Length: 68
Image (cartoon, rainbow, N blue to C red):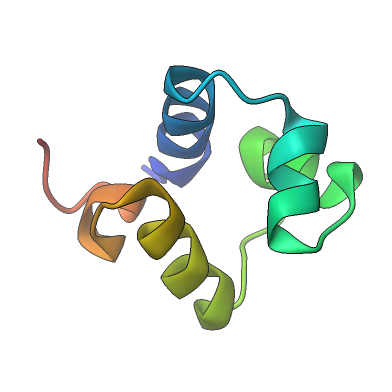
């Protein structure tokens, strides 16, 4: 099962960010973040890297291969 959508939402909420705020920080549209969180789309690898840096976590955590 793809854990990325739930992990992204969890990390975003832990930082107290809205989808719009996260999108702005990444130079994206809010709709893109919403689709990621709904599991309708998957980011390109470049965005996985950016998200891991932004949230200070690993890509493995983002995609559910490891738990913290």
